[in-house]
Image (tube, rainbow, N blue to C red; front, side):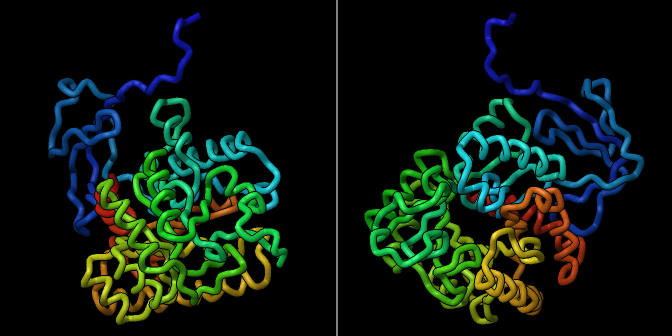
Length: 375
């Protein structure tokens, strides 16, 4: 029996792809008849010819097929692929086992980098890095930071005894997938704690959402001082803040406070999108999650979900009209493992508004550019 039974990283593999056409993630024109040498998880060389004997690599003949970068998903929820009832009634071990299968599915579907947009995926990330399980690179946001009665506040009913009582929250709070922080001191502490645990960026909720019941899409959440507190902490750690928000007033509120990425933005108007273009702010929209009603949604939540889906046509048509290209890729799929397996359908969903090359740029190069802002 070996002395060391700890997980070990997979040995660095070396592969040489020959006779491939390359989509580099940025340019529509393909580089044809090329060779690509991959060592471990990095591209070591691209050339018209590479000697396989010198590379000591496993040779793969692409036979004229197209080779492209791995997909970059900038808004996923790796810990939350289960029904609401399952989330309420299971422990951390169950969450971990489900997440292990989730990340494997993403990787086998071509996703090599994922921004986890809310969830306690720190240990999952460590297990992948150590080679214990198979999965993509994870950029954890950690618990979503939200205000009382904001997006993510899952409490129901009108019992005054729940006031300021975090024990009344569900499993997602108890297991570190969400955190309620009211006022500047609490926001500062929550952001700092997330970064201490390993977050590569911070996510806050600045507007309403479909996943909870107390927050219409049109509301603004958090004061300017609270948002700036999170932004200041992130910038001190040389990273950025991403903000969940749908409505244009909330988007402007977030931008004015220094937020660099707007998550969703389904109700954005042209002047606000123009402001985002001028400021170099990123838009992280999703289509897939709005093509179905997640398990357990009430009729009120379903109505908000349909409202968000209806807004997407205007978002993408306006982006094309004004030449706004700071758009990244993601699916935001929650509660449904079957839908995770269909996450690549986001590519075809976007083809309604964008050319294939534009969609692939969003799903590769653009995501990589935004990840450069992460610590």
